[in-house]
Image (cartoon, rainbow, N blue to C red; front, top):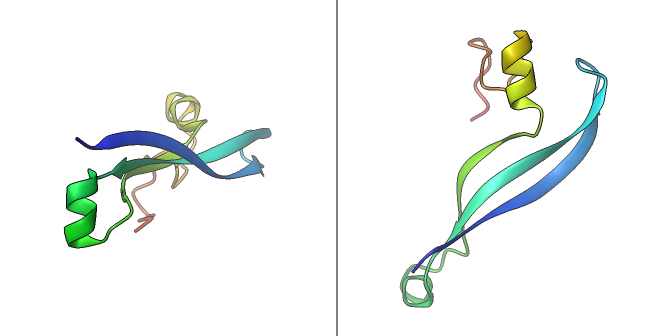
Length: 74
């Protein structure tokens, strides 16, 4: 059975909202049997900013808030 965990990748001060934010990844760690056959330590299921909901509600276009159509993070 897979394990899902949220990991803080980095933290910084966001100039757009004037607060400290963290960038987090939601990682999926496979079972031991799958890991032995495929060799991947984890997969990133999603990533985002801790202030993403606040920025979406305020209409602030940010690539980490997933509301900026001009920015593709991947």
